Amino acid sequence: MEKGIVHFLHDDNASFLEVAAAKSGDLIVKILDVQGRMAKTIIEKVEQGVQELCVNLNDLGSGNYVLNTFIGDTFIKAFRFFKS
Image (tube, rainbow, N blue to C red; front, side, top):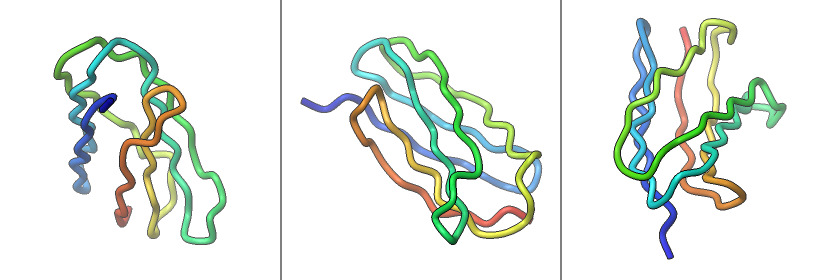
């Protein structure tokens, strides 16, 4: 059963996750640098349905990252992005 759908929107000014959750729960975002080291973890409560979450990436240095999304323990999607 599908737990949800996540889209990541990122530019130099702001970053957002658009989440369509099949049920309420924890959205876990794990951001790794190019060497695979954990750079940041974010946990947000999400409700069933569609919502947009603002993601603060200001504390990350410039470089390439991978953003992995999970709902609970279930992996949803990975996104690669560059932070300038």
